[in-house]
Image (cartoon, rainbow, N blue to C red; front, side, top):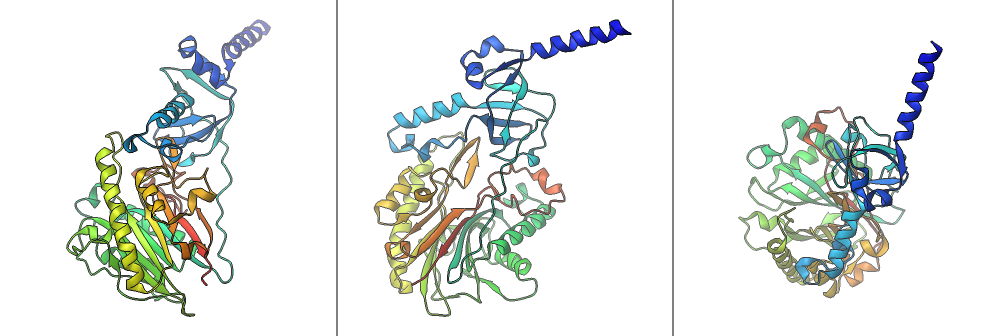
Length: 423
């Protein structure tokens, strides 16, 4: 019996000693040397993204290169390529058995033991322990402040047919509505500027029915468009705190097209007579992995159309206080964003939160959701930041089969919370 115990002890000691402790930098410098060996990585790592049965890990949070450098589509790619290469070199992909909905972007991994496989890929046959970052708590607006929220709600359809059927089922849509309503009540905004709402009145009506619960506190701005199997935008507002003034103004004159609901502006007024305008824009989306030169040009056109509309909105609504919200599908140093800044509108988000984000894709974070203000409105913005309730959670339709009572991941974008003190 004693001999068996000693044999087990020796075998266990050999097994432990076979697991070499290395830093991530050492591993990446000579990957072939460790191929097919199990290692313990001493470097603490951050979860930068999660995809089904794999995690993207790096020593620090990775940001999309266009957040920090002029991208390829804008002509100067030197710094962009350097940042893209840095992200590639810094990251590894871990294949594991973690349940994707229990791991969040930003989680910390320490003492990872895994087998080294192909270049920058690791494998473990079990789940790994991660340390969650503190929850992102949302402060309420202070007395005398008005809250305005811009949010992409990711393919919110009332008619589940055609385009929508490929993305959701009635049960999933019901859970999505419950999550969204819970988040909207928590944000408690006077105005919600929502992207990716089905064009027409059915989508806002379904959302309002759940939001009001038989009451009439919230209302939506009808665009007078027929219901169609496409996405646009919608304004939902709290009638106790604001009222609309004037009809909604669109950057596109064709009222038979869903583009009429993609870039628009609406005037609002408080009971005290303070007036302001909210511009809602949803620029052309990118094409992951397919190049972005053609879509970049369309986003440049979207920016031009919006900039033509805004002076008209000043005249139409009789006020120069304009807040620009929406999903611009552009990172901070891309051409359309710079064009808006050169036109005199102040970018509120990255200026105060340069290392923050509203969206994460393939392990890289950044701002696709924007907040600009006209010069007169900029002096009235007291607080602006993203609320991380979506982008840190990996989305998969299977997650909607869970009895999830949280407000997380009703969309792939985080909402942008703006508090203003109107003068």
